[in-house]
Image (cartoon, helix red, strand yellow):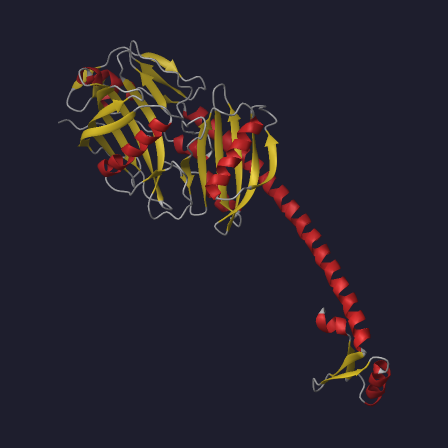
Length: 450
């Protein structure tokens, strides 16, 4: 069997994830949040909701989600609207979860049908560099060139090589790239930086750019309902563990449930990251619609696995699927479309940098305001305790008057004696005539509340 060539990677994708641009499809009433990046100090979560018609509603609903997530209501420090985009805004918050103080940022972007939500939180004592490490992803090497077959006008499809047919170029509206579409195929994808779904005329489909974070059992980060969980291992082991979770998510969103059969490994192409692995899997999948009725498809998946860091690892999925009866016939053209994706790296980098810079600027402004507010709070608290101290010292003066005595200390021996309050000053002065400075009065207020 001929080895499969690895699909072209999109090196800027992870940067957009950390910038909060990549989001997941979620249930309207109670959206699932996907962990798109994490460190030992915090997480970047993303979701979409269709139940919020205004920024205010989106923020209120998201803060309710965070209350359930952290087990206590966050304290909202400030809310803001984007001066350049009336459909974008957010809020900063503080929360103590399991005894650990956290600070965070919520960002919302209203869309025509759904509202994108990104939540970033980190320990309150984290430094600016640690915040940057959370929102700034590691750099990836440049993507490798396409396989030799593509350059020569042919495309490898596992066991055969076929000539390319004509494809119609579809340019993503945001200028981030393009993909070729075969006759009868459609897509409404708006950008190459998120999941791209191509739909065929006879129930075929091709998806590119699926990126997921999987939390391992060793992770110490707070659990997010709906996040993917599993142990790092071979692609087949990880995929088998994720399928039931993907199926449950699909069912919760009103989609079909899915079960996999005859899962086999086809190839192990080299991943562009030296520390990661790429595997091609082939399997059958049964889809059962919510109202009943099932269909069976053949699927081929290119699965990338990133190394474990801070108790998590990433999974990338690119796949092509078609009904059993037509898969072998459809496979060449589906593979051709997979390898036709072109990235406009300049636009992708510009969008990622702009978004990240704006996000960092807003966060730093909020941090500065937080520090100023904290300083004001500290000053107010100090004033309160100063008043309490002065009141206590005044009470001590009264108590001393009622008691009628005051302490006199021999500063050389440390011996203290109670002396009649009416005569204490004269007695100390007389003693100090013979040994200047040796004896001193200690008022009760200085003993009890110095």
